[in-house]
Image (cartoon, rainbow, N blue to C red; front, side):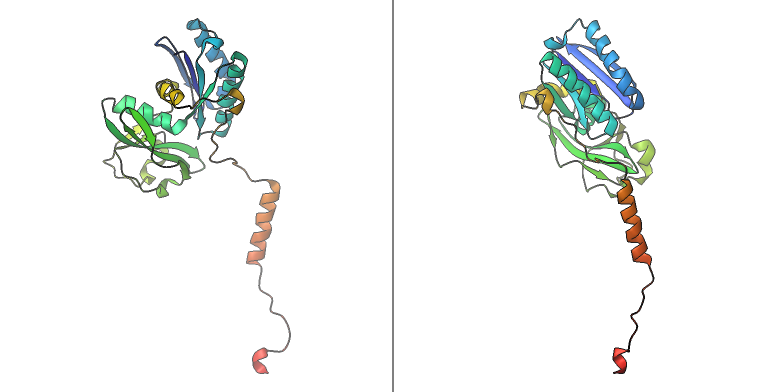
Length: 250
């Protein structure tokens, strides 16, 4: 397969390309720089592989959850390139990509592996989802969600994986003996996941590709802030007793 994969869901920009089994890859600073650097990096890798976009079987992108701007950047670039080349788009769950990168790096020989994947959502919260690896395939054990570090859902497994341990490690309630694998959702892991996802109908037309927004807004509107202030003022206002005769005295 000829596949292009790109991920900008975290502070790292990750792009990888495979042609006939040979892989080209790039990892660098992402976040605010991703929108400016992404297309030049893709163009360079495509040139190094001597590959045209129309020769790709699909373009995969990290669909989230993750940074709001990063998700939009990756999705828009994947859509634009795929639409122009007439190839499908493959949205790939970023938490699944974390699980695959953790397996490949820390437990490549494991026949069965249970991983709780965790990505920093900022604002003192985490994205989390549990995955089971068995029979050479990953299965998502529960829907992903947004949680405070102290109130992650109950789970039993083999390891935690993600990019949260430096920021929230002491606040995670899991036993210290449980392995904590610091990994990011890399495009090379997406390349390994892509064939199975494509085989199971994961590809969509370019115009149908969408990011997975868990937190779809990070700021309140002026009207929402005003409404909250008014509600707070009402809740803290002194209670005024109605004047008139005391019912108990009649």
